[in-house]
Amino acid sequence: MLISKPAFRVLGISECFRKRAKKSVLVAIVYRRDGYIDGVYFTFTSIGGMDATDSILGLYKSMNRKDINVIMLNGCIISWFNIVDLKRLNKETGLPVICVSYEESKGIEKYIREYFPGDTQRIKAYRELGQRQLVYVRSTRSYVYVRVEGLSLEEARQILDATTKTGKVPEPLRISQMIARAVHTFLEAADPLLLGIQPPDTGMHEKNI
Image: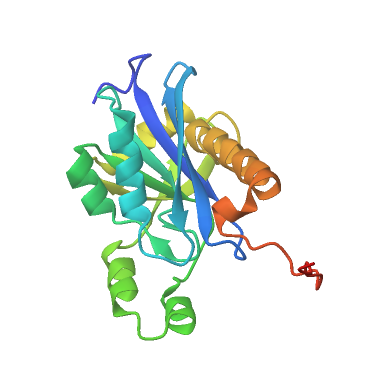
């Protein structure tokens, strides 16, 4: 993996959602190692569903690009416990996958059981993610947690070193997160039904005359 190439491309994917909606916004950007962005894409996934993997795969296939070197996710448990299958994502795209998170956690299985009682499929998907690994990012002297598929932990660290400019969040994820928030905010105001947000009931009804 020639991480040092200026045109080494990371597909960074982030989300934005509100629990009162039915859909979240997923944004993917193509970020080159030399700092250029040469693609922005978005799609939706369901809040509290189990379709995050299908949504990401559909987005990737719709891009019709063959120049992506690695997929980077801003978390793999998104949109209210919608769990991304990293192994399937790696297998069906043929690309290595890095999932990044930032906070310590004792795990979320107890919350899955609380909010989705009897959902054995979700529990199984969560367990199959495996444990996160702590990685030191030399470029910003920070630590993040990662899960990886299709590449080594050292390769993941090198990619994080190359793409993290400030703080903990790599640029492909920082920028895609900003765009996801902007798109979501716009849709909330312009077309909330597209996100599955029902307008408030004002108590006023039209009369037939």
